[in-house]
Length: 266
Image (cartoon, rainbow, N blue to C red; front, side, top):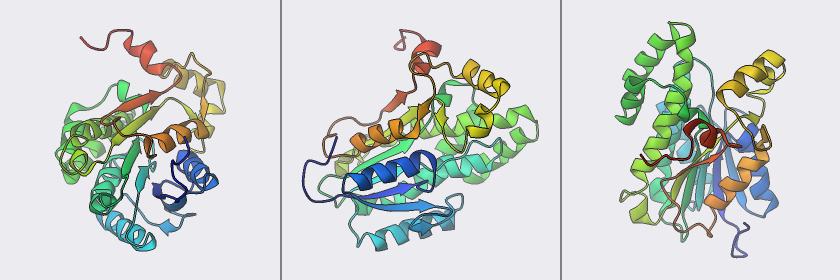
């Protein structure tokens, strides 16, 4: 899973301040790669990916710090709050940021991109919200997300909807001229429950763990550490991956297989 050459590759990793992003950045650095981290704080680039201006500023700064040469982008930044901000960060904060970097990424001899989706894509979602995101209408998506949040528990739909839209975007975009035409594999990973700052409070109680496990059953090795996801992200964005694209890879301890069964083709 290490780079096939002795020349370090330059990676841009969002969400690098904690969780999966921090583990991914650390793993890549340990392997001798150059990493430019992006996060609200604690990274080389401090930026707010929930806003259009923040995404553009972060992308421009990443290009500048990389000297105009980027080999891979790994988008890990995300939140799970039952509010419309989740839509802005998890979907538009990923897709718009990647779109800004795509032209520079395409200049690499082995360009790669990967994003973090979720096994929550298998949960109930708002079709209206997903459609608004895929249409690129952030204002409408936020309006729908706010209406869901105002209904109390329905606000949680902001999270699985944002991740399902992201996985659909990856599948849709991966075969376009911007990505496949530029020889850029574009993939997503879908973790199950990950032990991280985002989940530690919920997993601290028996009630919280039961709620999580009822919706995300993980028969293989239970909850995962973030390094597990980092290793897969590193391979997907390495020179070794030449043909895997458009995939959402469920690295979830069996959530997908448990919830969807053995026939996903019908």
